[in-house]
Image (tube, rainbow, N blue to C red; front, side):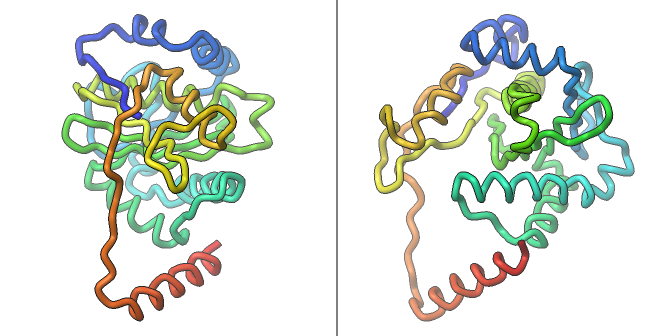
Length: 231
């Protein structure tokens, strides 16, 4: 699901183009005092209002914040049913990627500094990709617009950095390469991403060729065991 961007576009006009429910939830989240903290080793002019930059100490050692992020991701993965790397692997890779300027971590928190939601975004070429996100289920009733605010801030960063595309990720139906249909589990995610103006992009998908089947099976089993122990 791609959202085409014009670096010269006006942010207010872009927000106004979103579906009414999405706009209202974003504004509601702002009125409730939710703020978005940016963890980014790259110093750019994009990091101004309404963003709050993480301190240099937090960026130098993002482990505490990324550990909180992982706990939200793990809870979301458990609810939705997707695979997540072990915590140690996630912290190691994400920390390295943050320091290299390839990853941005956005954290939604209350005025009191209580985490509500978080997501990682990847820079590559003229695209910014919405990668992994999670939120606290116990805060959804109080802050129903947290995830939408998170995505909107990511879109704002993409525009300010001159990106041409905001990649909102896939909404694939298992076993099929088509848009989800009404009544299927992924249909709600499709509507969520379309509410920002994103459109479906037909892709071939990833393919894997197994050269040594015994090693492959052993590696998969070891990875699953490590993941279970890591959680």
